[in-house]
Image 1 (cartoon, helix red, strand yellow):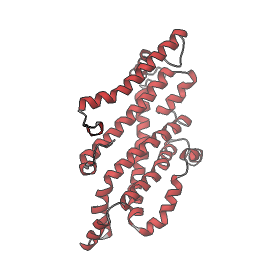
Image 2 (cartoon, one colour; image 1 turned 90 degrees about the horizontal axis):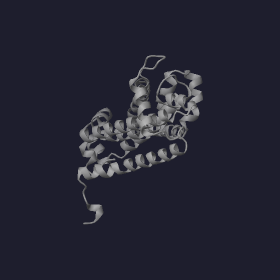
Image 3 (cartoon, one colour; image 1 turned 45 degrees about the horizontal axis):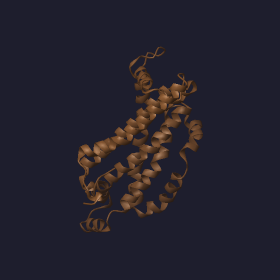
Image 4 (cartoon, one colour; image 1 turned 180 degrees about the horizontal axis):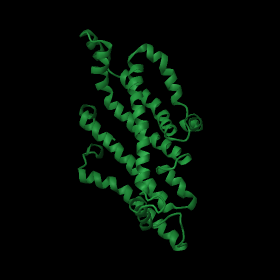
Length: 273
């Protein structure tokens, strides 16, 4: 049997997936050991034990000044901003995406505008957002929304346009109104595509979130990373980066599992990434 036709067992798949991570950890541990052998005070590549101690201190020891557990405070604040921004983008994607994809007049009027807005690097308008909305939560949420909504709208609109024309004709033949077709035909068809759009939108959303927190914030994962960088505290920075990656991975997997369970018919072609 050719290798491309072989089906992997779950233990084998897990093992193969773990190999790159194990190699990365091993390479880092060796590099860290070699640097500290030459310079015990080296801060660039702290040992795994030192990073574990720093993470324990941030997460399970109260801060001497505020009395807060900084890791959890930062995580809660960052996830709250991310959730609000993505929620607004999702609502816009549903309303505008379906309208643009299903109604020709709206498509002609708004599709070029949305396409143009999606090409603007959102990080470049961050100073404008700070001027308009101040340095509070609104500017950070707006950056996430502006950075993710246009692309999600275009993705949903394309998903609507990809619906087979035969289905729409059948609905019209049965006397369905435009609203009935949107709610009973279009929306069920594009929901799995919407979840995919959210998953893809979360990648730039994390970038914009960390950038906004680094520039103007008093809490959050991005704020903490850029706060401790002045002390070259790589034992804090690297675990925070790993923690952000883990959060992003868990959210992505939860969305995928939701899609697999709610819309199994959308995943019949094979495995989903």
